[in-house]
Length: 95
Image (cartoon, rainbow, N blue to C red; front, side, top):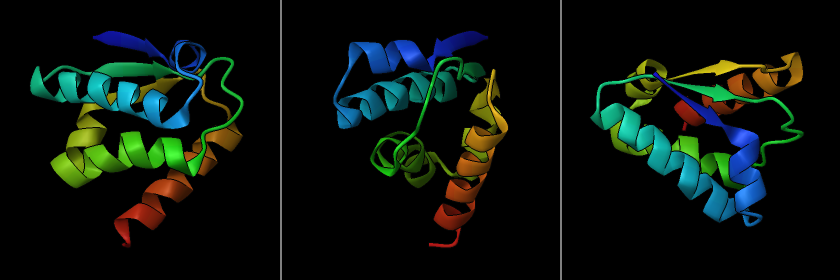
């Protein structure tokens, strides 16, 4: 099991599309290796729709919601972040 420190991705890539692609690549690697990653949300202040579309949305498009749920879990996630993520996933699955 790997830990993905999301704040490090944001620190490395100031462009949200690049940051989203980086997270997408990391999640994709977890799916392909049948492993699970923990996404550490410590210090993350926001997750824009652009970032989530390029990372999580793209994973759902290519692999499906079940693969996403098997590949990742979250740590240090605030209630606000969890709510935002849940709302995003609900809206995305209704598209």
